[in-house]
Length: 336
Ligand SMILES: [Zn+2]
Ligand SMILES: [Zn+2]
Image (cartoon, rainbow, N blue to C red; front, side, top):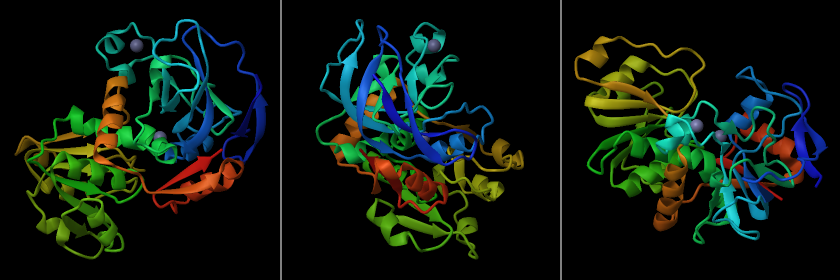
C-alpha cells in the first residue's frame, strides 16, 4: 500500500506531497483510512522542530479520525469498516510497570503518532502500532468533531480525573482557545463553578456560552488580583508567560495550578505561595487508554463539541499555517 501524505521535508518547511509504503501490517497494527484530522499546535511545533527531536520527512497529524481499513492477526475488538479516532500515541510497550497499571501514556517507550519516524494522519491512511490506541467513536460524536477530542479533549479531560477535581470545586480556565474552550465545557458539565480568564473581554460571551459562570479579564485590570483565594483548581491552557505569583495567590488553600500549555520561559514563583496553604503545581498532557475512552463516553453523553473550522486535506499546509499563527477559532480540522 502506498500512502499519500503531506510532509515537511526539513525543519520549518512547507508541507509537500510525499508518498511512502508502510510495509506489511504487523500483528498488533491497524491501518486507518483517514476521513478527518484535527490540527494541534504540537503539529506546527513538531514541523518547526521546537522540541529538537523531530525527524524528516515528517507527516503531522495526531488527531485522526477514519475507518479501519486493515487489521493485524492479533487485533482484538476492532474490525474493518469501524469508525475510530487516534490521538498522540499509537503504541506502548504493554509490559512496563506503567503500562501494567493502565498508565500507558507514562510508558518510557510510548510510541508517538508524529515522533520517532512514525508518520501522522495528514495523509490518506495512518497506521497505529497497537490496536488499543485506535478508539471506537460513539455514534453521537460526528467525525468532524472527533479529531480535536483525541488530543485537545484528552489533554483537558485527563487532569480533571487525575487530580480529583470535584463538582463542588471553583475552577478557572486560563485561555479561551483550542484547549480552553473544551476545558470550559468539560468542567461545566462536571458540575463545577467555572470562571474563564482571558486577556480581554473579546471572548466573554463565547466563554459564557460554553459554560463559564464568571469572567476575568487580565489586561490592564486588577480583576485577577481581586480573585485571591478564589479557585480550587486553575487550568493554564495558554503558552504565554503568566504572572505566576498572582495565579498562586488566586488558589484557595490546597488548590492546584495545572499547567497544560507550554510557556516559553521557565515557570518561576515564590515558594511561600506553595508552602503557606499546601498548594501544588501539576502538569498533564494526554491520557491513558482508559482516560481517553472515558473522555469519549463523557463527551457523547453531554453533547460536548469542539468549535471548528474545516479545510480540505489538500490545503493542509495553509491550515497548519492558520493554526501556527493562532488564528484558528478554535480548532482547524482537515477533511479528506
Ligand atoms: Zn496535540
Ligand atoms: Zn510500557
